[in-house]
Length: 239
Image 1 (cartoon, helix red, strand yellow):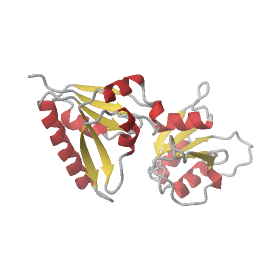
Image 2 (cartoon, rainbow, N blue to C red; image 1 turned 120 degrees about the vertical axis):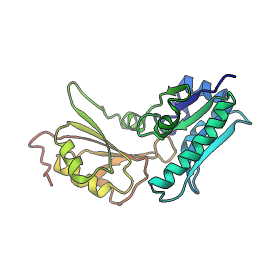
Image 3 (cartoon, rainbow, N blue to C red; image 1 turned 60 degrees about the horizontal axis):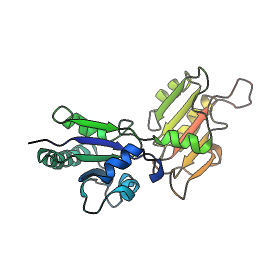
Image 4 (tube, rainbow, N blue to C red; image 1 turned 180 degrees about the vertical axis):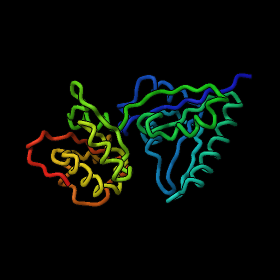
């Protein structure tokens, strides 16, 4: 009996029109989809893919409790993996929905660790949030021989500041509650002035503004900060 294929499918930053043609085709024919959702909240990946799913598509969901620790997260993924294995064993392909790209800070990596050596896997890339953010802001990610860093905003301050010293431009993901730390690290690296905060990608609430105008301490977890080093003598003082 044929065993099913595990498909990690990137749905992009939240705009259904930014799915690839291949992703849309696979969603339209999917028998089973799987995704992760926080307790009490809908899955953004599922919402983005929803327009392409046919009625009757089975759904497997891993619900992550609020404030879940590593153990709770592992249990949730373990339960999801068990459900996926059951479907694959019956010959059903399972499409796992990932925000952005499946292999860029994506939860699909946890399933690859568990199932990648046992079942055939296919990865369908998606547009990462930072690429969509740069496009929305008309902000070049890199020019000529510039060095670019892609960092989670949750990095410890000293490690972040050390990395920023060696690059020309930076994209910061998972901003959330890290705004104050980001402002300090970017100022120390002469990247604070001109930095942009992009929020609500792919939604009606999409917003782009200078980081220095964001006085709040917390923004949405999917917000992106784009920053570039100012030339010496530009007037920005380091921290």
